[in-house]
Amino acid sequence: MAFNYGGSDPLGGRDPEAIRVEALRAELAGLLERRTGSDGRHDTVIPELKLYRYSRPTEPMYVLQEPAVYVVVQGRKQLMLGNETYVYDRSQYLAVSVELPVVGNVFEASPEEPYLCLTLRVDPRELASLIVETGRQVPPDDHDGRALYLSPLQAPLLDGFVRLVRLLDTPQDAAVLAPLVLREIDYRLLQSEQFGRLAQMAIGDGRLRRVSGAITWIKDHFAEPLQIEALAKRVHMSPSALHHHFKAATAMSPIQYQKRLRLQKARSLLLSGGTSAEAIAYEVGYASASQFSREYARVFGQPPRRDAERVRDAVAGGAPVT
Image (tube, rainbow, N blue to C red):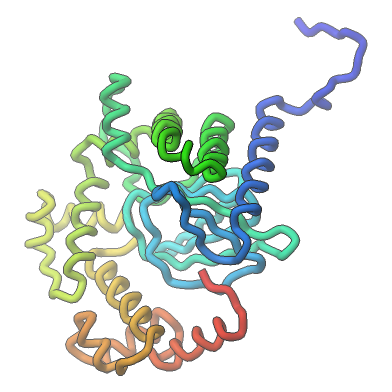
């Protein structure tokens, strides 16, 4: 039964939870804007926490998206993984459970309202500890196998992020209190609809954990020939299962993943200058410089040297890149 007290509704008919979320988000945006005086990445005294700011849209860039939780509090960004595009803004957080080669760019940002984002690296060991402590059962490994997903950003989780960023103003407190807030954030993440996926990464022996092991090996040996049978044996999967689950998680096959790592490493070396494209091709594992040039142009749109010159000219002209 509803009661009418004759007065006006102080919330204007709005959901109290939505009002709280907006207040927390506004506070977090203010904290990030104050602590990021320039565009780009800003490391913090809390090693797991990084802050980002961009005052205008960025050009699409190939990057290796690290396993972390990404929270945008102002502006919008998109990631392209395989044939899928993920757009995330202040209504959702992005979570990545394995390292993924993606194309990313900020597409909503301005000097008046810059893109503001924080990233938090989550330790699977802490998640595992909480799962054991709370006595929750690890569910069956029956999720879609993706290593990148979006979830609604709700007040309890957002509140934890606000209190974590506040600690940056008092580094002496952060040393003691940040681990407690980080543990609370881990707990909140485990209360989400993504519990099954997180639990399998932290404590299970499921597909994502085995795919993660394969990715770690490929990263550490990206310039070496990749033998799928040997890699599958290493992570206790059949070659066909490895290929299927690897592609479900990363939107590419192990060979394609290795190729993308090689090309992104080559691009980084080219941008730093000091050696020829042919020498870089052999350094990252290509047996043929011409094949390297063809595949590089297919991914980045231009041959190696021309692409490197274009990116350097863009940066010199003040164009932001992600």
